[in-house]
Each structure stands twice: as C-alpha cells, then as structure tokens.
Length: 371
Image 1 (cartoon, rainbow, N blue to C red):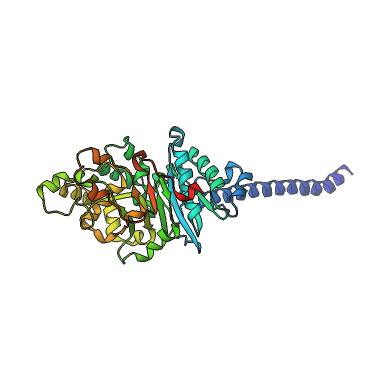
Image 2: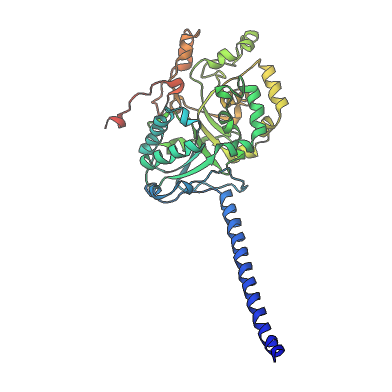
C-alpha cells in the first residue's frame, strides 16, 4: 500500500519540480535579454526629442556618453542644422561657462531653423551643456552628447601623428586631442554635414545662412573655412618665404595662401569620407612629413595648421568663407613684429556675422543684446 502511494505522488512531485525549474529558466533568459538590449542601446546615439524644458525632469542617466559605432550615415532631419561643439576641462576653466552660454544664446536668438547640438565633452562638460541649452535654446532644440575620451580613442592613431606635426607636444595646450578632432570627425560621427564651432563665438546672423553655404561648394570642396585674420602663417612659413620671395605662401588676401582659422568650420562629412586625396593625407605620416619638409613648417595650432599646410598643395579641397563669418578679434601679432603688414590680414570690410573672441578678446555688445 505504501509503495502504491509513493508511485501515485511521484509524478506530482516531479511535475512541480519541473515547473519550478522552467520558471527559473524563464527568469534567467529574460534577464539576459534585458541586459543585452540595454547594452545595445548604449551603443547608439541618444537624441533627446521634444522640448528642452522637459529635460528638467530627466535624470543625468538620460544623457549617455556616445562614440557611435554605427556605419550608416544619419541624414539631416529636414529643416535641422547639426552643430558640433567641443567642451573639455570645464571644471578647471570657469570662463567656458559664460562663453558657451553666449554662443548658444546668440545662435538660438538669430536662428530661423531647428537646431541639433552635438556636444563632445567630458563629464563636467555634459552638465554644463545640458543646463545651459535647457535655459537658452528654443523648445524644439535637440542635443546629442558624445564622450570625448571614447571618441578620440577611436581615431587615436591619426590624432597621434597629427600631434607630431602640428603641436609643440601632446602635453601643450594645442596638443590636446580635442584640437584635432575636426580633421577626423567624418570617421566618428555618422552624419552628412555639420557646422563645427569654437566656444568663443557670438552670432549676429541666422546660422541657416551659414549652412546654406554648403550649396556653394565646388565638386571637390569638402571643407568651408575662413582665412586667418593675422599674419600667423606669414611667420610660421618665414623660412620658406625667405627662400621663395615671390611665393603666395603666407601672403595676405585676396591672392595669397594666407592660412586658415578653424573657429568656424563647414564639414561635408560625406564628401570627406569619399575623398581619396584627403584620407590619404590623414593616413600617411610620410606624406605629411614630406609636406612639412617642403614648406619648412612646424605648426603648433592644431587642426588649422593641418588645413593650412594641405591647402598649399590642394586649394580645391577648401571653400573659403568670407571674413564676416569668422571675424577674429585677436591682435596679438600686431604688437609682435608685424605692425606694418598687420592690416593687410586683419581688415574685413564685410558686415560681421560671427564674432570670434580668440586669445580672450572682448566681443562687442550687439544690438539684439541691448533690446
């Protein structure tokens, strides 16, 4: 009789045990899928949609650090301009806060088009960017945060060789990787066109008009950039100019190869990806070494040194912006040996659209600020 009862209860116990095991397996599988999905989401761009005011209710986890691993080029949303700004070491540089605020406010006040800010930054920069844009930008503004460490690691090899040719050392001010990111931005951000800006700018014109200049690019032009407004490259090319007195290298506008200032950049990232000439310059240290030796050039100003040197041989890669789109206010070189020729570089007869307070120059108060 005892054997019969054991026989009858055994299947029930076995069935219960199997049910428990099955439930445990379901829980484990669900947890694994959730974590996998969570990790995948971390790999992608996070676009904060809707109103910027809504960001007040978001936790810091809403913004993720991004170095996109996607290969698909993200097309510009219709009626939207992608703006790239780099912020680093803001904790040790409190002047960045008001400068960034002025930049965002001036763009936002004048813009007739929706904006998407791509902020490449560290942890402190993320906090500053989100809080300032929340207060200063219009409600339809979008923001994408990129982790500067992850992003620069992806192009570490290319940046390292640029540091060799275009900075005093990797530890100098302009030796920081952030000053070379624009050169390789087409390899780390899957967009087609962007406007990349220094923090120390103030707009007095609709940024839409700046973006429209992409339509004026020639077939071979991949970068829009303004001339340097000081005789910086007259000085840096002085050895080459001494041996070639009739050269255009380092000469003033409109006919000279004056050199560039990278405070305002129009980057056609799609064309940059496709340009064999441009990418061969990035990937070939030997080619850059040959150019620096030919022009007896040793730079120290980061990406604009690279663009300037490349333009000596490949003018057609660059669309030159009017001085009004990057009116540099620094006059350091006027008082350091070049007073007689300074105005040939510095004069800008255009109505100023973007003021650039480089070397901590004061930007004038504009009419819209007085209202």
